[in-house]
Amino acid sequence: MLVGTLVVLLVAGPLLPRWAMFMLNVSLSWGTVVLGMMLLMRTGLVSFGQGLYYCLGAYAAGTLHHFYGIADILLMLLASLVLAGAGAFVLGFLLAKYRDIFFAMLSLAFSMILFGLLVKTSALGSTDGFGLSAKTLAGIPLGDWERNALYCTTVVVAFCAAFGIHRYLSSHQGRLAGAIRDNELRVEYMGASVRRVIHVNYVISAALSVVGGGLVGITIGHVDPEMAFWTTSGEFVFIAILAGTGSVLAPFLGATIFETVRSFAYEYSPNTWQLILGVTMLLVIMFLPGGLWSVFTRKRAA
Amino acid sequence: MNQFLAIVIDGVIYSSWLFIIAVGLTLIYGVMKILNVAHGSLYALGAYAATAFGGYWLAQGYPPMGSYGMLVLAAIFVGLVAGPLIERGLLRLVYGKEEVVLVLVTYAVFLILEDLTKLAFGVDPLSIPEPYGLLGSFEIGELMYPTYSLVLVLLSGFVAIALTLILGRTRQGKVLQAVIHDREMAAGVGINVSRVYLITFTVGVMLAALGGALTAPTISVQPGIAAEVIVLAFAVVVIGGLGSLGGAALGAVIVGMVRAWAVHKWPEVELFSVYAVMALVLIMRPKGLFAAPEARKI
Image 1 (tube, rainbow over the protein chains, first blue to last red):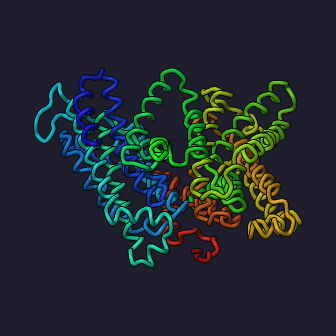
Image 2 (image 1 turned 135 degrees about the horizontal axis):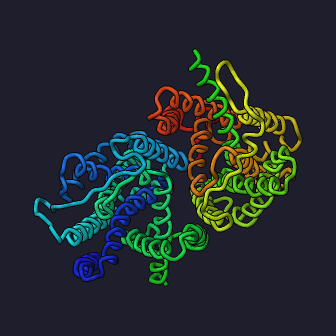
Image 3 (image 1 turned 180 degrees about the horizontal axis):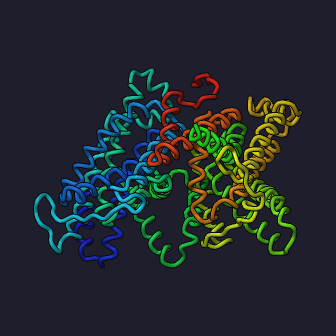
């Protein structure tokens, strides 16, 4: 199923009109971020600070282009991955001790720190941010093919992420995530280190957010501090809730629905967009706790 | 020396403001264990209602001093309408779920209220500057301060004392403490917990709206203020310890002083400093400064 989706997306994408490909590109990048969110939720943690890594990824890519003139998609992604991976590894030591709303609050504090820093850093464009673009992919100049190449990179990255997480979740360590959500103490009794699992999952989710952020930055061609503001993280939370944590494909489905509805809502009714979000979220929490994905699985079970 | 004085005074003014916007949040969490993300929207609603009520009052040509009454009236109005509506209509249905789920529910309310305010009041900035200028200003040394800020400080102190007295000295307060301590036992001895929740939430909403209504004269009221205020309020209550009244006061003072210091000495870190303190306190004392230790439950 995964491979089929990959092929369809790769072939169909460039045939789509430009706007649709752009939208799909952003959706898949967001999906990658939400995939990280999903991994945390499986562990029983809700982060209101995923924007920290999303923003870091975008800024790392942007800074490379802006200050060092490097505009290679892979290099940009790699740089952001290294930077934020290191950051997440350090912060993970702290955050792995926190649960529930305290995890949410501390992660929120960290992302707001980044927001506060970026807003006041005039070298990085303060509140306006700055523009960026990609010119090469692994050293090959792209020319007019920039959009298509970027799209294909995104599809491949999203595919690898989904497949990787799928494998991870069925591994020994991955299965511990759900166990921790159910009963942390028992996991400890059985001899597994809860803190280590959370730490590892946190770093993975940060890595996914970073890559997603980098891709969004390059796709949109602009980065600004708003990406680290808590409302951005809130949107990731929203998509994760909407989609559910049932499958690694759910985040991508959720992100695509989210992006599509948002694009049209901005066009036709900009002042009721959040109203729709809020009502949808309440409905999902009340009547569909497993998210949209649970509709599929429920049918199959019946 | 003069700068030190300026920092302290600015800090006191900012702290008082922070306390008013944050105290409702900590009250609701303390009693209901709900971290109300919509608190910021209710603050915004209060601010919008203040421009509507106050604007109407002034447009009618009534004595301008009465506009202060209208600010308070606006807050009470928002509390009485939005409080029961949200508590009875929605929160009642989700009690007993995990705290994180409750955060998500109130986040949904936040999103809904954001747009409802836009629909009701439009997206253009509104303002009601009259009450701010009306009282003139006073001097401390060579520094000039608007008297309105003094009123804010006094009012904030009044709210703090009133809440402390109500909680500690009245029958209603004792009932509330019983509910905080053990909800089921409280219900067992005949306390109407559902009513306590309703009243607490309404009062919390009123305090949020009061914060907004009192801030309205000093800012331009526009979309986006809710999102800014709620994270500040989070910082304040998390530093002090969620659910603790004294904690909220301490948190407000810490954040207020740090920010005032940053504004004067190192303006680049102004915004950043607040969250840096929040992260630091959470790292040192994961549950905030005033939180009581909790037994580990299996």
